[in-house]
Image 1 (cartoon, rainbow, N blue to C red):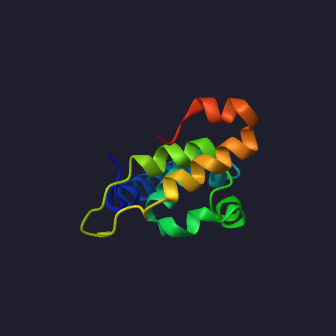
Image 2 (cartoon, one colour):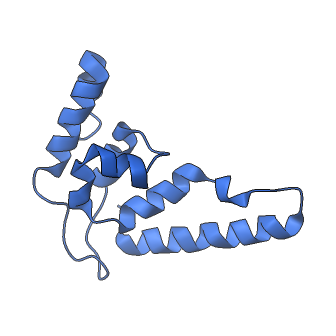
Image 3 (cartoon, rainbow, N blue to C red):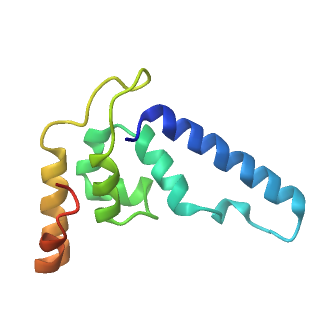
Length: 113
């Protein structure tokens, strides 16, 4: 299961790795390291109801595909930092968007349920 707190820990670890890599030389732009892990950490800390909007998802989580967002959301559980569960119907809304965007094959994957 994934939580807001685990998103914070992941974000901190990625920041430490980035700082270490910057001290090793040879890397001009460490901001491009681990884009999917960064996006996953952001998703865990992001208000889940805002994930319904495709433009918001694209702006905040450009490294993740909709099926990846969907898969992460289904594994999210509340914790002390974010005590609210995933909004009712969000998983189904995301699944519907996967079906629309991925045609028949997107629906057959059933990544959200």
